[in-house]
Length: 77
Image (cartoon, rainbow, N blue to C red; front, side, top):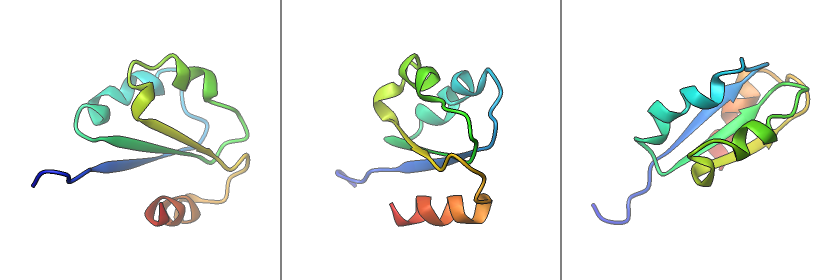
C-alpha cells in the first residue's frame, strides 16, 4: 500500500479560537487537510501558526455557500 495518500476535508463556518489546535487529532492521521472556509473572516494567520501548517490547504469562499457546496468542492480536489 505504498504511495497511498489520505486527505481530510474540514468545513469551517466562523471557527472558534481553538479550531487550529483541534486540527491536531486529524493531522496525525492524514497526509493533507483541506480547510474549506465558509466564513467571511480570514483564517490565514491561525493556519501559519499551526504546527501542521505544511499539511493544511486553505480554501476561502468569503461567504457562506453552505455545507453541501463546501463538501462538493472538497470532493473535487
